[in-house]
Length: 150
Image: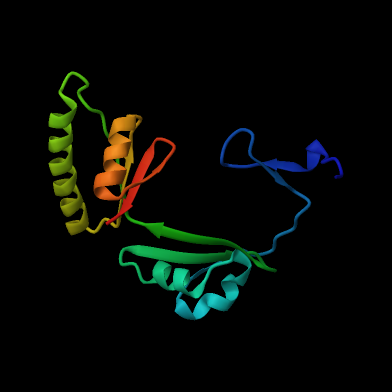
């Protein structure tokens, strides 16, 4: 691999440490909202017809293809997500806390859905809560984040 000349590197607006190689000459960047008929342009991304149909048909979401003047680069899906930070009173009996949590999350999900949210994301570092959310509500756990489509 050839060494990159530090003078040929641009700094990214995304913060320190992010760098963009300046030898790449991009004339134009375009964005296109996608529909089901756009599947052929997504072949390099490994997106199946079922996935694309699911992405473009979700109310409250958008799917965009971003290309430079030569090739498609990014496939972006945006959705209306409600992100929550959750903490539990550790002095309360676990069973009691679980019962209240189950009712509170059920009500919260109903309100979020009624207000157009399509996903719930909870930042949480309690293993017991993670287990309860996954087993009871079908959340998906990744690192300290729980997510669930509404």
